[in-house]
Length: 183
Image (cartoon, rainbow, N blue to C red; front, side, top):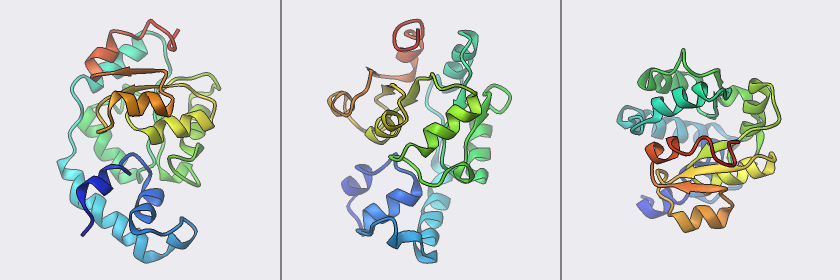
């Protein structure tokens, strides 16, 4: 059994990166059925415990009201995205979303951010995330990242990783959408 702290330090990576990192394999070794089965089993156990952050749906609505195209960037499988969109009641609100079918590799690789940019039809964007993996993936794609302290990483860790701004909550972020790097 892995200690919780070790798992926590990798949360935010895509499953194709997370499981190999936790079991000590490089990603080339980890493409076997056994690793995929372990990843899928973990997600199936945890998906029912997922709940949207306070103000998450309202943030999407605020972004839309400010005139931003909003693409939800996830490397999860389609069935999980459908579950999350329903939980958030955001299917009609978001302009689009990504799934694992849209990428070769997940965070911290930039594929996910590039797929979201393509769906948004732009190269100019701001990523909203909550882990150093989000920041690294966005940086590799040339996109600044605004973060919220919801992913278990402290403000200093997010700043050290290169966050353009760090907010305590989604609600706090909502009050800063007319400030850099959004404008």
